[in-house]
Image (tube, rainbow, N blue to C red):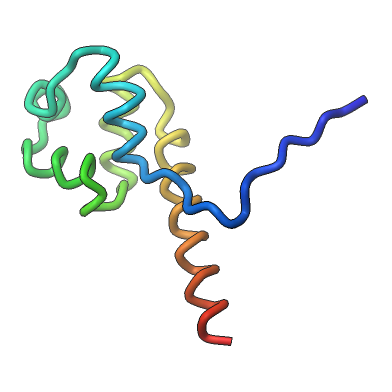
Length: 95
């Protein structure tokens, strides 16, 4: 029997920056400044991402994947889920 995994449809997806903070930086005890240095980007860019004020870009996804030994697709899929949710909400309100 194949078990189907259901995604909640009415809950806003978690922003990639929150995942970055809660699932990587905090458990690994890496500061935003350390991550920024390792990625070669500004601390303000990391901080804006972590605080949800900046979306994940393909470039940032690649840099994160190299630094944290993840895949760039992981980060981009998190962003796509947020983007699709926003678009769905906008279209529902426009109808």
